[in-house]
Length: 161
Image (tube, rainbow, N blue to C red):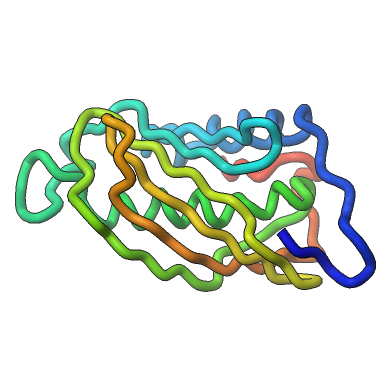
C-alpha cells in the first residue's frame, strides 16, 4: 500500500481492531444479517456469513445461488470497513464500488476478504474477493472509501444500535 508523502502512518493495534470488529459484529444490522467482521493480523478485513439462509439466496433465479444484492452488501461492508485498518476511531464511508462476478456463489457459508491497495490523505482504495463455501473465488470488487475527520459519536464504536 502506498501512503501519503509524509510517510507511513502508524498501524492501529490488533486490540483496537478486534474491539472495532466485536462492536460492529454486535450491531443490530450485522446481527440481523448474520455477518461477522474481523481483521486477521491487522492486515485485511474479513467478513463471513457463516450461515447462508434462505433469504440470502435467489441468485440466477435459483434456490442455491446467493443473491447479488447480498454479495454487494458484503462487498460494501468489507470495503467500507477497510478504513479501520488506517484509524478505527474515525468514521468512513464507501463512495464507490465496482463489482464483477465470475461464478455463482453457492454453499452454506461465504467469506469476503478486503485489503487496502493505496491511499491519499482522505481517500482509501481497496480490493476484495468473495469466496464460496469451498474456498473458490467467485467475484471481485474494487472500491473507494472516504476517511472522515469525525470520530464515532460514542468515541469508541462504529456500531449503530
